[in-house]
Image 1 (cartoon, helix red, strand yellow):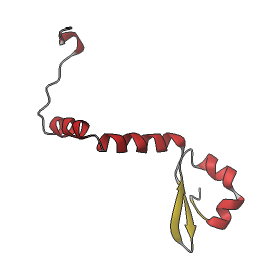
Image 2 (cartoon, helix red, strand yellow; image 1 turned 90 degrees about the vertical axis):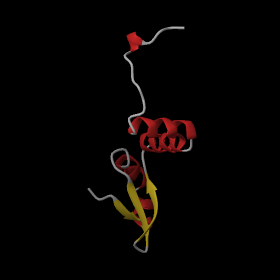
Image 3 (tube, one colour; image 1 turned 45 degrees about the vertical axis):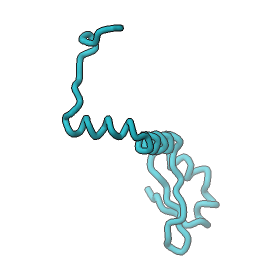
Length: 82
């Protein structure tokens, strides 16, 4: 399945490109240079969530600590309720 289209092709096929983008990103080009992408809402939501985590210093610290083995995990039944 083709996933790269010129602007002219994309204009003529926009509804089908939107359907296609539900599975894979669609690339739009002008003079053989990428100028845009059509992506699904699900993929855009995932990108947005990732950017929010990356912009959150506390979240990034927790991720680094987990990767470095500095995080201690417990089973739910081991956690005392306050």
